Image 1: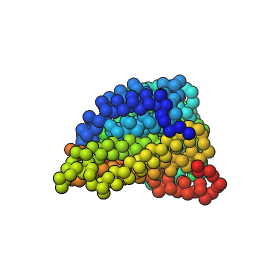
Image 2: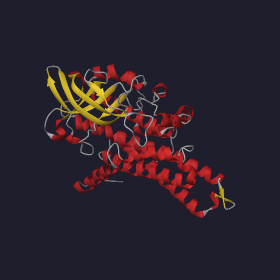
Image 3: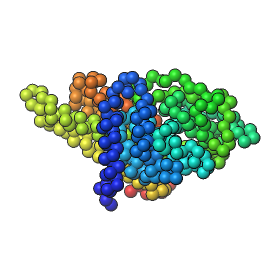
Image 4: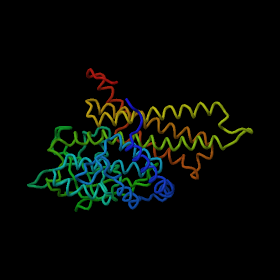
Amino acid sequence: MDFDLTEDQLAYQQAARTFARAEFEPNAAAWDVDKHFPRDVIARAGELGFCGLYCPESVGGMALPRLDSAIILEQLAMGCTSTTAFISIHNMATWMIATFGSAELAERECPSLTCGERLASYCLTEAGAGSDAGSLRTRATLSGDKYIVSGTKMFISGAGATDVLVVMVRTADTGNRGITTLVIPADSPGVTFGNNLEKMGWHSQPTREVTFEDVEVPAANRLGNEGDGFRIAMKGLDGGRINIATCSVGTAQAALDRARAYMLEREQFGEPLASFQALQFKLADMATNLVAARQMVRLAAARVDAGHPEATTYAAMAKRFATDVGFEVCNDALQIHGGYGYMQEYPLERYIRDTRVHQILEGTNEIMRLIVARRLLSAEISID
C-alpha cells in the first residue's frame, strides 16, 4: 500500500493547480457576485483535458482513473468551488454518454463535450422526486423511431447554458425498472428553461427548471436499453459522489491554508493568534479531519476504478464524510478569521456558501447513510 502519488499524478496535480491559480482563483469572487457562468474559461479547461477526465480516448477523453480525476478536481476546487463542481457534473454526464450510448451516439456527441466546446447537464431531479429518484414522472412514449418526452426537471445545474441534456425519463410504470435515459439536445423544439434560481451559493453556474413539452427524441439517443435508466443514473452518481466529495476537500484545503496564514499574521492581546492553544487545537483538528476525508475519497475512487463489489458503498461513505468535513473546516476557518471571515473581502463566506450544497446534492447525506446501513444490514460485506 503506497500513499505517495505517482509521477503522472503529481504532474496532473501540478497542471490543475497552475490552471486554477491562473484562471479560477483571481476571478471566482467576481463570478460569484455577478452570477457569471465562465464558459470561455471552462473551454480552456477542456483544452487541458479537464472536461473529459475519465472518458475514453476514442472520443477525445483522457481515460484517467477516478483516482487521478479526483486529484485534478481537488486542485481546481481550490480556485473556484462552484465552477469546478459544474465541470465535475459535466464529466459525469459526458461519461454516461460515452459508456452507455451506442458507438454512433458517442462518436457524434462526445468529442465536442470532452474538449469543452459544448457542455452537458444531468437531469434526474424533479419537484416531487428528489431523494426518491425512482418516483420521477417525466414521461417518454415510443412512437415509431422516436420518443415523445413531456415533463419537468428541477434544480438542473448549467441548464439554459449547456448544449446537451442527459435526462432520466419514465417509459413504464414499474418503479425503478421503468426508467430510461435519453440524450436530448438542449435546443430541441419543446425544451424550455425557467429563470436562473436564486441560490445560497454556486453562483458561477446557473440552476434552472427544465420543461419538456412533446419533445421528439430519436430512439437512437437512448443510453442502454429501456428500463436501464435508473441503473445508469446510479452508476453515474458513484463517480459524481466522489467528484463532489473531492470538491469539498479542495475547498476545505484552501480554507485551511488561509486560516493557517491568518493565525500567523493576526495579533490579539499582543500575541499572534498562532500562540493561542485553543486555536492551535482547532487548526490541528481541521487538518486531521481533512486528511482523513481526502484519504477516504481516494480510497472510494480506487474502489470504483477496481470495480470493487462495494464501490457504491464506499462512494456513499466518502461523499457523506468528506462533504461534512469540508463544510466544517470552512466554517472553522471563518471562525478563526472572526468578523473579517464574514466579509466578502475574504473568500471564507463564499467557501461556506458553495460547500453547503454538497451535503445535499448527488444524494443527500442522509441518503448516503441509508445506502451504507442497508448494505451493512442486508448482507455479509467486507468494509476494510
